[in-house]
Length: 49
Image 1 (cartoon, helix red, strand yellow):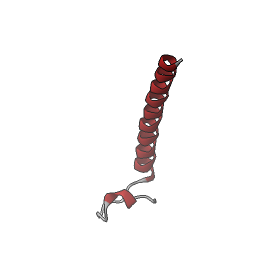
Image 2 (cartoon, one colour):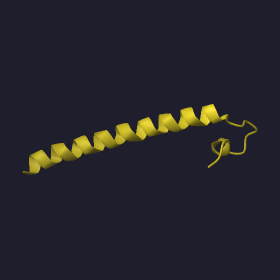
Image 3 (cartoon, rainbow, N blue to C red):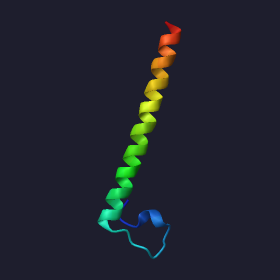
Image 4 (cartoon, helix red, strand yellow):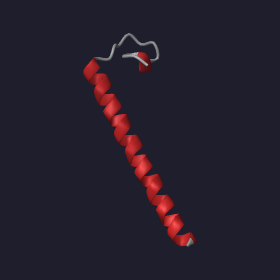
């Protein structure tokens, strides 16, 4: 996935800085999602023991 590949063929070309910011935002979202999943796992493990 190169710069601009997420635009669905639009003429806009992402700059490297735009792509970096988008990737960082995606990484933060995924990290937060993983943290929530791990929290739920721990809570379920406490209930089952």
